[in-house]
Image (spheres, one colour):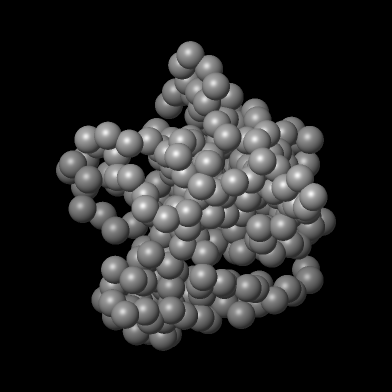
Length: 265
């Protein structure tokens, strides 16, 4: 199987939350598609009120658009009109999630349908597939610290098995340093989380099939888990040697490639 270089960019900090509820900023952007890309106009559509944190700068808009484009849900058409558009995958998924409809169609029983389309699309991105494979080799679970260290080690797709072995040894011996140094050190643990969280969220389809126990659930686990029903879906793609090998980017062509591979067009 061919070996590919991996690109672990540390400058993408936008979080993507689609499940169990769509993040308000993500919903606002999805509702503005088809319009001219005007960050101030889109910012004005962001929710306000007692329970909504009102963003103060247009960077919040760019963050949300970036997070959606990196998973193939939206794109900008560019000059001269530069409109914000949903891909076909974005149209299908957001309708399922209840954007533009009276109520969501999605529930915990049929979430697999949305996840299946998302997984098929995300499979064209090398780094997402690599995270899936790493999680499969480490018991379908992974922490932020483990991924941060593994990213430093995984310079190519040929390094995944070694990274998995080191993670398993580190767990057994209770010493994360056995994995190796962090890719991203940041100012502190919180800053590190801000870089790693978006990778998990994008690779997990906005929590559609990779999740972390929510606060108040009674679990203090730091592990992200692959949903059991998603395992065969991920395996089917990680074992497919004929897949495209793209790096996630905010280019319209990347978003369209993810959407087309999802089967939605």
